[in-house]
Length: 307
Image (tube, rainbow, N blue to C red; front, side, top):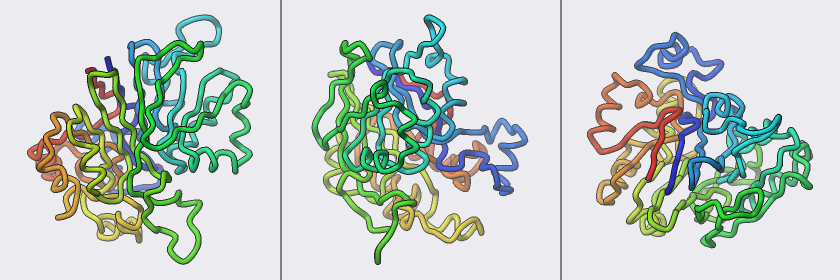
């Protein structure tokens, strides 16, 4: 069994973004049912429906836990069904939520060496006492059998795999700060119960032959849906960076995600990590209609997929 809950569907800043007065954010802030608010990208996975692993600790994690009954304490004065947090990168949007979990509750943090090095380099994360909250390295392409806090098997195996991406924004430096790398700075996560395969790829700079082969045969893919078009934020007057500069494929370019997936036979394809500027967030937009016509779903907070 794989039980998956989308805790947050939006990219950094959420939807609405706190300082955005763009039309989409205005609609979300006003409670428009065709533009529902979304928190920042994160999912929770379980092999039994009772014990959970959070994948990426967004800045909205406290809110996400509170609005997800499956993650509420069930026993004693203090407890949690969260057994661990798995990190696919070290961007602010994927690690800040760890600080929400600093109340001396045992769980484990799993990430690649590059991700753990970023945590180690920042002393604020020592708020998570290492004698209580363990840090475990995941190696690329090596399966990890998830375990509960008492050491019993969780029923799921996860495998991190390389995805084209870039270093976190705060770590950019040198002559080519936005260089696209395939070294573990950004990873995807394959989740399996031995029968089904779910791939979680919230950030991806481009499609590669390796990634295409990894995607084949998946039952579900949750994929980077940050921007509709590469220059979307520039055209809207919201920023100066393209999607490629930020390390993200765009949904509807000729070399974008819909085109790249067209000949991949994947029964369930879901966009996640969707920027507040992306019109697919609006249920009445032509871009949403085109996305759904191409066989894609647009994720939302609370979306649940069970295999």
